[in-house]
Image (cartoon, rainbow, N blue to C red; front, top):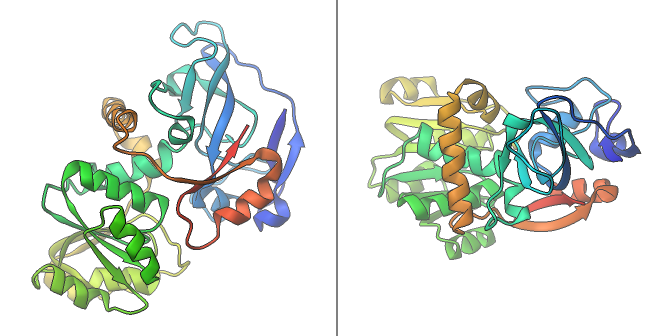
Length: 326
C-alpha cells in the first residue's frame, strides 16, 4: 500500500516521500480502515519539522485525523461491519491507504455527513467547539474575539457562534478577509494592518474590554489581544502561527485579574472523562449532519501529490482545508 513517510525531521518539501509499505493486519479487537480523506493541518507539518509537542520516532507516517471505511475487522469485533464509514479518533499515521485502529477508537459516520466534513471532525471542529462551548462556556449575546479568523477553525467558530448565539470579533491581517468573513456572519472585524486591536475592542465593548478570547497567532498579535482583556478576562492560546512567544504585560494582568492559558486538544482527549468525550462527539456529529457545522474545503490532492498538497496548505489566505484523498 502507499504511505506518506519521513525518515528524518525537516522541511516537508525535502523529507516527505510516498513509499510502498506492507499493509497492516488487524489483530483481536482491531479494525483495518481504508482511508478515504485526510486533512493537512498545521500540527501535521509541525510534526514533520520536529516542532510539535508530541513527536513520533522516524521513520513515521504523518496524519492525526481523517475518515475511511471498514475494510476488515479483527477477532471479537462485533460493533462494526465492512464498508461502514468511520472516523479514527486519536489514531496517528492517517496519511496512508490503510490504518489499523482499536474498534473502540472508531466513530461511525452518519449518512448525512459527507466524507470531506467527516475527515475534518477532530482537529478543527472539536477544538473550536471545546474552546467556545466547554472551556469558555460562551452564552448567547457574549463577545468572543478570535485571531486567525480566516482559518478553517475560525470559520467553524463563526458557524458555532450562529448556532449558539454568541457574537464574534474577528482579527485578520487583510481587509479583504474581513469582507469575506462578514458575509459568513462575523459581527465585527479588526484588521491589524490598519487598526489597533485594544482600541477597537474598547469601542466595540463600550470600554469594558474582552471577557473571552482565543488566539492562534502568538507574538505581538497575541499580546495585543491580551492587552484588550477586561477585568476577569480569559484568553485561550491554541496556536503559534507567528512562531513568536507572546510578550505579556504582567502588571496589567495583575490589576485586571485576567488570565492567559494554553489549550491543546490532545491533552483534553487524554484527561476528559470518556462519557464527556462521547457527548461532545455526538453533539458535533449531529451539528454536522444538519449542516450547521461544515468545515470548508479548498482543494483535494491524491496521496501521490503530497508535496504539492503540503505547499498549498501553507499558502496564506486559504478559504478552506487541503485534503489528501484516495
